[in-house]
Image 1 (cartoon, rainbow, N blue to C red):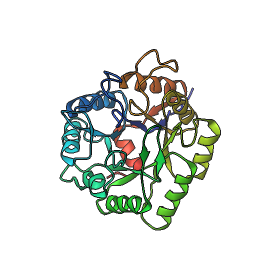
Image 2 (image 1 turned 120 degrees about the vertical axis):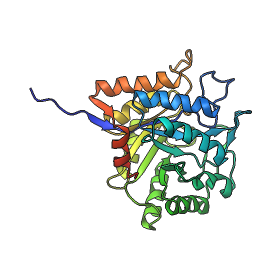
Image 3 (image 1 turned 90 degrees about the vertical axis):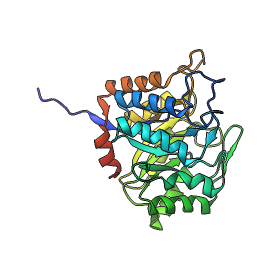
Length: 282
């Protein structure tokens, strides 16, 4: 009987984020050495892309400083040179353009492959993420000038339309990569119809991964895999293993759960080199 090759997918790992603290969970990696260790462990499991947030070594507070990102990137690439690395340009804590874009100036082997690009302003539970059009366009232009690809973050349908606008202006080149993130209180909710509409509106040939906030993470990950897409998973979006919030998750338990779902569907992650090729990273 002929064997059927498994379908492959982007497994995008979000180890830290900006919100989880030691008081919330002892398992979130905060120091550069901890983030490096978690990333390398998950890369061995099958993770092929990482969405990095940096924290200050002492306080654990989110930081934009490129020196901290450089330490993390160097530590990862010493062991996993082909792993696709994306850095955050989030404005939730630091909203000045110079601060948000500083990490995009790294070079000499420390240049990230991707930079995050949130495509509109939005509200989270207790905080706004302000992304004026000039900031979005400025970040996209700086990424293009420095040969860093944008990881377009979409929380609602209108953000897909803004991505198309940037593409029409020549500010983003194919292949296009999107993270579709559902379940935020003020944006698209974690349901099949909302996800389907987002996927339908993506530019032709787009590569996409799906994440869910809180307990919606596993549901959206499963829907993404069933639809033939990729996955965004990690403690950035969800610190609990169950809907009842009785068991804290680790990054390993979250990634292993995704891999079990993928296996049941006859899927496996791209290798690191395959992911680089698919995503258009040199």
